[in-house]
Every structure is written in structure tokens, then in C-alpha cells.
Image 1 (spheres, rainbow, N blue to C red):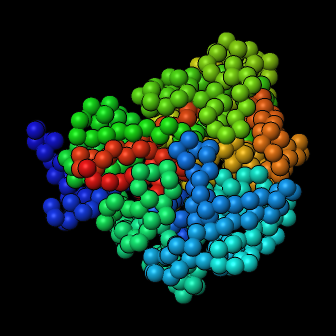
Image 2 (cartoon, rainbow, N blue to C red):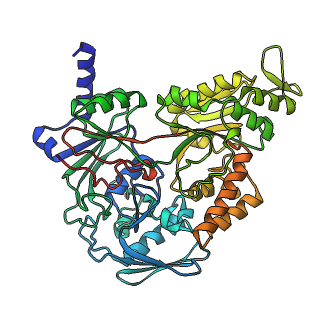
Image 3 (spheres, helix red, strand yellow):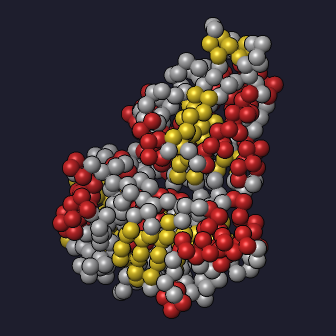
Length: 525
């Protein structure tokens, strides 16, 4: 081993900080890139929060590895009224919180009441549907009534936002809930959290109600340490040195090397829906002409960008959503996305943007130099690649990147023409309702896409009482925004999970980008 490799390995060991061989045999260390802001499913939308929340909490409904099949969770069964307005959930009667408190239907009701309470300032409440009332006729029955049908409800209930909580504890802790402690019913319990360093979980003794998608319905390890290791080289070295036992936060360049290492196991999620794109503010002067937006799309070589940025591991995107997702429209004309320089230049000429002596395009004295906002980090390489592609057709893309601490505020403004983003979704309806409803401007509908027909179709899809109607409505929305070239779809990201020598191979799950999902795939050899 070279001196440089030895130094890197020692740095990895110091960063991980395993206590010793005896503890290491009982404990699993997972390395990740960043930390969350809190462990409160109603107040955080971060993936780093979700991946722990799935382990320390449970939802009424679970999601299989295919990302389409619903499985029982805390609810062992459910029925839906013919009008789609009333859901009746029959709960397990053997569930306890980590504190030992028995979970009943009253806890389910209290959880949703907390989320709905304005004082909670809960996020993404649309994921509950338009709630009329939620009641508990008895300890094992929950009546969930809506004011209007919500065809996405059961799929949304697989998301960690729907984690059932011990609300009595939440009331006692107030603003410290999810920071100092959180009482869940998951296979693991929160022992401690040191922000920007590590989160420690311990086995929930007595837990036996995990989803049947795993070989085990209870935790197989005593202790899980989520360790924050920002440097990708250190994460990779830690896995190779056996000082980290698992991670999904592995750079693309390392996948081939990690796969070749016979001490490690690399699993790719069979279905994972997380797409990178650049969206246009369609009412901005420089990009309000659909011909310009189409030309920009035709100037971008998604295959080349995917090869450069992901070493060819991602799927180049010719549609806004992954073709494998629930209710995807397979009839979309994909030829309007993907490199075609000749057609791009023709469209720009037709739109009145003519090339000047400097090779860039102008119209009425203005230069075609749209400004794109993004978050620093992974988007930098993507943005610069797109910038280079657009210069081929005379477009001078301007890039402005921000640290994540201020980026979200900047992305809520009207100061830019386009923005870079990536996002997870569980279905077509999940993605479309989030991004394309008029009411969701200026964020997350940062495109300022305000269209009455789109809103009507989204209502039709979300309120559908059968699968065919829902799929048809969402297919029509996809057709509309696809033809309008509202985004530059870049690539559909893959998800890899690496597990170490002392663990059995674990299968990667795609739910919300949390490869370990419930953590029940962690087991010693």
C-alpha cells in the first residue's frame, strides 16, 4: 500500500471512529454524505432524515421493491368506499412504541391531527389529501374520511411523512421533538443524535411487525451508527477497509472498483425514481417561446452528459419521468429531446434569434443568455456540461450556484430563467401534482406553469375512482408538459447500496431514495 493510500485509510478510520472489535461485531456503521435538520416527519423533507425515519418509525402502508405493490404496515388491511371518500384501516394490535407504550388507533389520529394543526407548521400536507376528519371508533380501527377522492393516498401513505408518532412525547418536547428524542414504532429506536457527526440507533426489542418484503420481520443487528462523512474518497476507503459496513453514498467513479471487490456486495435498486433536470420559467422573456425551449433541448446531448457525469451508469432522460414509474405515458414523442443541432438552429432562427459576429444569438438587441440557478455540488458539473452544449447553437447560458443553506430561498424568487433540480417521486401523480399545479407557484412549481387544463386534469387524476381514469388523466398532463418542453430532462439516477464483508448482501430499495428503507435487510453473515 502506498503512503498516500495508507494516509487516506487512516483518515477514513479516524472519521468513522469505531470503538473496538467487540462493539464492531454487534454494530453496523453506515456512512452518509450529509446530515438532516431534524427527525420530525412533519417538519423535514430531507432524504437524510427520511432514511433514519423509516428505521425508527412505521407507516400504515408499506411499499414493495417494485415501487408499485402496496403491502400491509401498521395497518394489516384496509377498505375503500365506492365513492373514494372513506378509508377504513384495521390495525395490528401487537405494536408498541420504543418507549413501551402500546400503539392504538388514537395514536394514528393524533399523528394526523398534529400534522394538520397550523401550529405545527407541517410541510407537504397535500400528501394527506383533502382531509374531512380522521377518527378512531375503537383501538384497532381508523376511519380516514376525505372531502374529495385522492387516488394517490395509499401510495403517499408509504412515504415517511406518514410515520405514526407518540404525539404525547411530541407535546412534551415541543420544539425539541425530533431533535432531542423521537418515539417511534420502527425496528430501531433513536439512542442519540450528534448533529453533523452521527446518529445512533438501537434494536427495538420485541419488534416483529416488519413488512414481508424482507427475509426478517425484526432487526438482526443490535446497533446502527449513521456516520456523516462528507468526503467521498473517505467513504469509499472506509468501505474497502472494513471500517464502514454499508453506504448508498458512493460516487459513480467507484462503482466498478467496489463491484470488483469480492469482500463487498453492490446492489442496484430495481426501481428507483429520482430524476435530474433543468426547468424553465416559461413566462420569462428569454425562454417564453416553446421553440426556444425545444431548441435548447435539442442542443443538449443527454447521453454525453450522462457518460461524463455518471460514467454511463444513469439512464439518459428523454422524458420528464422514468418510464418504469406508475402511470407513465408510453406514447410520448421522445424525438423532441436528445441532440439534433440542425433542428435546434432551425427553431432558433424561426423564433427570431439570429447569430451575431461573436457566434451568440441576439433578438431586438438582447442576447440569448438565460440565467440558470442551482445548488453547488453535483449540479456544477452538469450545468457546465449543458453550458458547453448550448454554445454550439449560439446560446450563452449563465450559471449561478448557491450553497444549500441559501439555495432554497434563492430558488423561490423570480430572478432566474431556469433552474437545476433533482427530485424523488413514487408515481407519475406524485411528481405531476407536486410540480405542475398552478397553486404551487413560486415553489415547487418554479416554472410558473399556470394552466387551467393542467389543473383540471390533475384534479381528475387525483380524484379518480379507478386506475384507468387516473392513468389517463396523468398521461394527458405528461403529454401537455412534454410537448411544451417545460424541462430539459437530463438523466434518471440509479441507486446503489454497498454492504461490507461481515454483512449478508442487502437488496437496495428505491423508496424516497432510501436504499436501506426499514433497515431489515441488515444482517450478519
